[in-house]
Image (cartoon, rainbow, N blue to C red; front, side, top):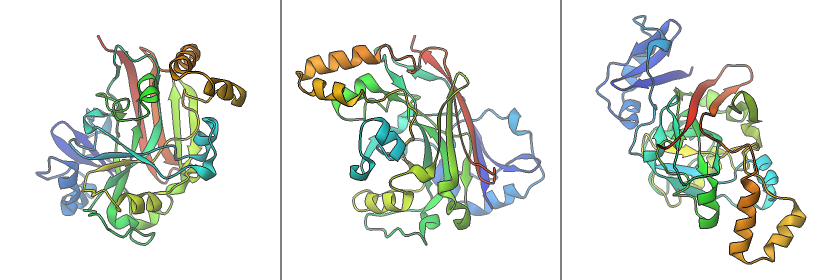
Length: 312
């Protein structure tokens, strides 16, 4: 049975039927907490609880850690941006863990960023060391993935696209809201991964709504590829891609063809002029709500609510 772990500035908590019970642990990092299974189990069975809504929650994934993300991993998203899902390679990029923020913290838009986008994603939290060469299979996935979290891969598109690399555009502080809960799953629950539905709303308008069945590369395949070259440790975070519905979308094919004939500087100038008229990009005061759960509610990763604020 799943256990939802919460974190405040000074403690870890396990959600129970009556509230949140403090975990009796000296752990200061997510990795250390995951190694203290007895304390987690004891807290989840405790009746000494406080109301969850009295807690001021921070990210249940602590920094520093590795943050690795999958690129264009939903068929719907690839199609929407003009690609062919059948030809998309399994590709990763890194985000700075300094971008991790809490589930209710403001998302701060840097002064030079005009095209701020959102991407709700399922985050895998690693539970045991995964050296290069580790064999990941359907049968042992739950041995290495301790649990799942709601994440938002916030992106500065006007930084990302001209650079043709993602690190800066996705690594500003507050660009990876995480939580509210780290939901620890057993092997049978993890097998329901594709039943998880990702939803994101901006100012109450539903922008993204898709299940993980739309993924091109599921977690087993992704981790098999990662462990060919990347060591992962307990507490590391792997983002698994976002479905259709982001602010960014590809122009029609004829426009793409004409643009391909233009010099790069002219092409980007025209592209950004067009994107600047797109009202879906985030602006100061926008409320972003992201939630992930199975439709029957059996597995619920919770919902985060963040407000976009311009840097002062």
